[in-house]
Image 1 (tube, each protein chain N blue to C red):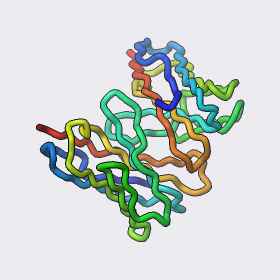
Image 2: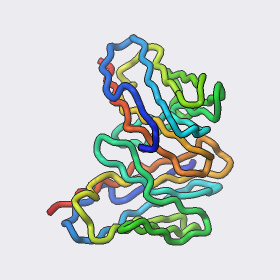
Image 3: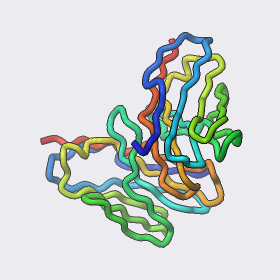
Length: 112
Length: 113
């Protein structure tokens, strides 16, 4: 899987609790992305990073924050989880903007 | 608005048969078009990437075509196998937009013996 690992793979959490998902890469790729995948929707971009400490919002960023303190790690935090954030979350990496994107295995998050 | 639409939504075929999946897009300015295969419970895996100047690209039994004038692409699967059962996602990238991988909702293909 192109040296990209997401953790945890599955998580159930209660409404209102903070949750952090981790994406770790061993490819030294510059670009990292967090997407969510929901039935009836294509993958939607939450946040992305184009380098250490350089991040920006995607189309569905409300309720999410990210951090990238090292090239290899990109963290996605739900400050106060809501049921609408129940989804499958995918991390992706790219060497350059128009190069192939590699995806992690996904994290299935359930907020109850 | 930049959009990617795929058809059909789902498809059932018998093993050994061929099939063609369609992708229409309105993304502008266009950079490249990608087809991904996503097995159940896994992340998408790239099949092909096509730029403006490429009309056809093959990857084994998968052949993608691109008509940049009509903004249409197709993915043809030859001699289908049970392992081809998956979702196939068309993704279009816009020029000069770092965050702009625009995803279709996918075609769910099921191959039966």
